[in-house]
Length: 171
Image (cartoon, rainbow, N blue to C red; front, top):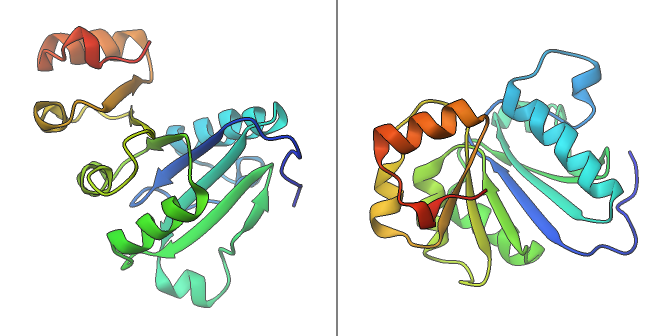
């Protein structure tokens, strides 16, 4: 385990609730999904540049009991593991503790939408769009959630198919 950079500038929280559970550093030991690989590369690079990167991941209760996943700092990323059965309250407690400037939801968009209603309006909120799923409901009601795309091809396809307004896109 490595230490978090001493002079952190920005706090960023990645939510991976319902995704593939992993510990940063696993990328060198086993196959991971594209989103998990992105988090490993981006998170550890930003941590080296002085960002305080935090990661919330849901895992099976059995894996927590068997200590397959333990909270700690891995590759410069501070990890928090919750049981799959943990609800919105557990995620919100971590958000309140971390007090991030940015939150990036990697999945569990419905939970994220509910969470956004309960957290500080000054936190910048993003959805990491990595699958071809319709997410337009979030944009009908929430003016403060932005989209991040995996590729230009995907971005243009989404913008065309779901008619996402210009002011709702992150560049």
